[in-house]
Every structure is written in structure tokens, then in C-alpha cells.
Amino acid sequence: MGSRRQRGEINPAATGREVLRIRVAFADTDAMGIAWHGAYLRWFEMARTELMRPTELPYAALVARGLHLPVIEALVRYLKPVRYDDVLIVRAAASRLGGVRLRIDYLVEIGGVPVAEGHTEHAFTDAGGRVQRPPRDVQEIFTRLAAEPGG
Image (cartoon, rainbow, N blue to C red; front, side, top):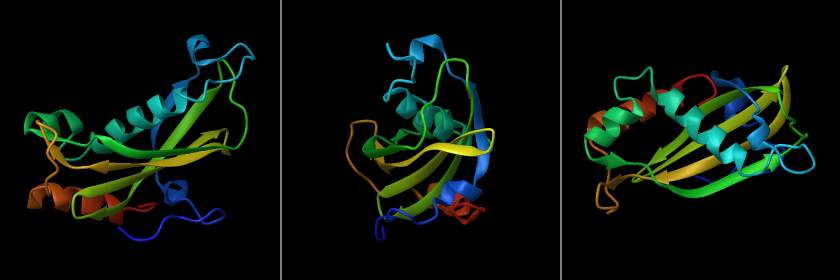
């Protein structure tokens, strides 16, 4: 899989494509009026689904084939507060594919200003949760995604 990205290194998603535009809902905020930390992981999941949508294997088709991508690691760095009604742009990029693992990097922006960044790592599994190498065509799709700008 390679080494982990160190603080200060460029997030591959910074040049990745915009995959999600979402407005912060009141339900996403806490008593201080700031987006709740867990909402970012939901936004990452939504972005991951949108990253795969234009491929020949969107997430729903992957699942229909009996393949799953459970999260085995998640990291979010909160750079600036996000508040109710802010419009977020989420950029995503597949940055690493190796063996049975996949890493997706994310950058959340408001008006071009980074407000959060992070990544999720996934294991390819079958419907029963058993880890498995993805079939060749699936590997090729994610290899292509990782080769895109930002990936």
C-alpha cells in the first residue's frame, strides 16, 4: 500500500475532481452551531459513491456482484469550522490500490478554501465479509481512478 501521507504533504484529492456539492443541514450541526465531526464521514461516503458513479462499475453494481468495500480506517483533519447552510465542495481521489486494500483521499472546501481533509481505507470483501482480491476488471477500474489527476 505504500507509506502514509505525512502532515504537510499534498493531499491527492486537492487536484481530484469535484464529486459532491452539499449544503450543511441543521441536523449536521452541534449545540455550538458547527458541523458535527461525524458528518464528515457521511460526506466522505457520499463522495466515494459519486467518485465511482461515472465508471462502468458504480458502487451499486459492485455490491450486486457480491463485492463490498468496508471501511477499515478513517481519518479526518478539521482545518476550519463548517456551519449550517455552508455549501461544501468535496473532492475525492483514489490514491492507492494494492492487494485487497484501497485508499480514497478527500478534500472538503468552501469557496476554494480547504476546511477538512482526510482519507478512508477499505478492504475488498465478499458478501460474507471475507477479504478477497478484487477481480481483474475491478482492479483496472480502481487503477484508472488512481491514475486520474489527484489520484
